[in-house]
Length: 322
Image (cartoon, rainbow, N blue to C red; front, side):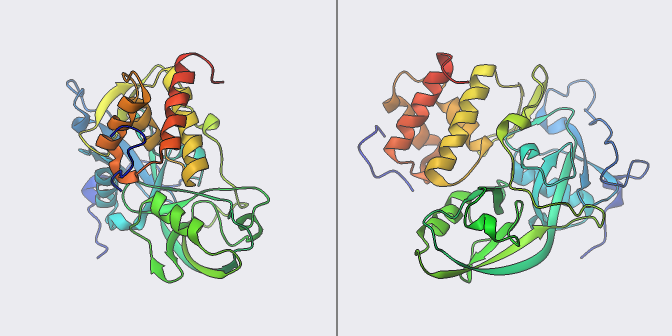
């Protein structure tokens, strides 16, 4: 609907046939190149990718998926675990590296590392500031986790809370199946001056993979070299094999991702890419708002946010974004 009209919609036996017995076990080992189905592999469903569990496992092959949820199910099947045990995936590294998160696109040569649930922990926090300093994202399949902790913020002072932690409950309310924007809103709405309790789950780590706490990263380090094809995962509709985003689109996606953090406290490259795609052929912000309602109506974006996103897309097209 046009801007200004409001009321937007708001068992452990493993199937070893999926594993590649002859390939590396240690997560730090150099991963083999992804296997691509032979001739005719233009169909996304026939593409094959190599995968490991980030804390260490044999190498498995996954194929036949068209969305993030289906991908997680295929990875879980390959390793004989429940899909809900997978918190998030990184590309080409076993480390909890927020710059290498699997998002809307997977390079056809990328290697997938799945991070599974590890230790549970509980923390009580006094909300002494309106801003907690957390940026939340999710894996697209029902697992919200911490992507960034702002340096010097309230949460930065609580060292038990780490980047990569899954937020399981807030004040006893189970949020394990909530989207990132829902979790971010619950945290924002907590009353200042009151104590609140978080139950978190950290990613499982290999014994040798105990590293200093990270505050997360930035999108700039996450760029994948341009000039090769990627598999584009979509929330709605089938996955497609596409060229990497153009430089203009890449800048627009980065800016929209930053706006998502500013307005909603979340980071989501897939969502940002979907919004940029929705504005690709639109002539004005009203057309853009209608397109967003049709594809992403559940988010109920405020009008000022939609205007800023439209402006960012226009700035990228005009070369005004660095």
